[in-house]
Structure formats: C-alpha cells, structure tokens
Image (cartoon, rainbow, N blue to C red; front, side, top):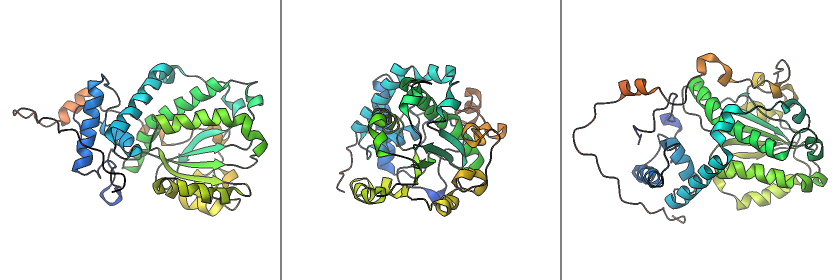
Length: 323
C-alpha cells in the first residue's frame, strides 16, 4: 500500500516478487497495510510530518512485531532524539578531521558491497583504547559521527545500492572483527559501546542484513550458543560466529575484489580501504535525491478521483504474539 503523499521514492522501493519476506515492502498483507495506515495517522495526529513513508513505517512496525502502539512509541522516541541532537543540521555541517587518528584505535567504516548489493560495514574492536582516543577526540563526537554515518547509510548509501542492484536494499552486511579483544578492556569501553548499541537498536531498527563475527576468542562460541537461545530466531539467523577460519564464509557473501586484503579479499584501495568510503554511493550514475522532485511526482500521478476520500480504517489490534 503506497502513500501518494509520502512514498515518492527516487530509487527501487520494493523487493522482487521472488524475494519478499512477509512484512517487508511488496510483501505486506491487508492487515499490515492497515497497520501502516493506522501508525502514520496516529503520528500525523501528534504533529509529525517527516519520515512517514511506508518503508520507514514498516521498519518500526517489524521492530515491534506489528504492535502499532509500541511502534508509535519507538518512532516518537527516535524523533525526540533527532530533535535533541539537531541531527538534520548536524549531518549537513559535520566534519570529522580526527577520523584517521581515531581509526588507528577504532576503525568503523563502510566499504563497497556484498553479493546481494548491500553496503558492507566493518568494525574492528581489538585495538579500541578509550584512553588513547580521549587524547584525539571525545565520546560525544564519536557518537555524533556514528549517528551521521547511520544517516548517510540511509541516504545516500542504500538508495545508491538499490539503484545499482535494481531492487530495494534496506540492510547492510556487517563484519565485526574481535581480533585482539581483551576482557581486561571491557569495563573501560562498556559505557561507550552501550550508548553506541542503543543508537542502533532504538533509532535505526531493521538495518541488519547479515553479521559475521570473526576472530571470536576462545569460549565466545560457547557463550553465543547460550545467548542465541534467548534471542529472536529471525535475528539469530542473520548472525554467524567464526573463529580465525573465516575467509571462505566471507568470500561466499562478499566478492574478493570488494573485500579488503586483511580479511582474505583482494581489495587494496589507494590510501587504505578503511578511509576510502568506496561504493556505489560515490558513483555519479547511482547518485540522486531520496525522493523525486515534486514536478516529476505530479507527472507520474494518476488523476485524482472525484469521489470522496475513503475513510481511514478503524484501529487494528496488534496480533497475538503467541499466534
């Protein structure tokens, strides 16, 4: 169910017929369409006018098992955070000159795409040293940079990847490298990592496509086998925990020329992969605005019906979680 007012996307915005999961764009049923309509209507009543497109509504609904009230609360929390952060302005004006120095201790970067066309995100936790990082920057700027990168992931990275793939892409493929991680450093980094994790979970739902945890230390797999039993099976299916023999698994998902040499690929970007920001989002043929220009939208619209507008459906109860 597309919204003429909000869904004027300038990139492929539904999944192919042969690759649609229930509750995703192009794969919703009548009840889910009604829940999108209901959620949007409730948010409009609260005065919200931005980020009400169908795909965003679906991400928040999926994150809360299509419970409309819980989805509404999650969305409002995210919007309040955006306002407090003045995020739209922050994205426009953000500079991070200390980035190369920060990356000596904590590399976090997007680099090309996987075989499904999704952006690849790489994070190396082994060298993280907050005492050293505090000599270069502060946690507030690190978290601001993380938020800006999440915004740039949503636009321009995902739309560019969708244009190149010719289909909607909503998620990333993540490599989390635990090489060198020491339990002795966990207490000093816990507060920062907790805040970083909260930004991802609370404000950018449904963005994980696959997660490879590589160089997992001894005992990690045993702990994961226990913890995974407590998690949503849908989430667990996206995560693969690997030791040092990870190369074949990564290459099954990521083409060798897109995977940095240090992870078993053949890519050696000039100046280093972690600072290159290489990907379709920097290729002019895949760049463009998130939404179509208003003039172009009008050309594509069907003539307005003369009949009175169909009233919004009555509130829909969230499906029983046990069903």
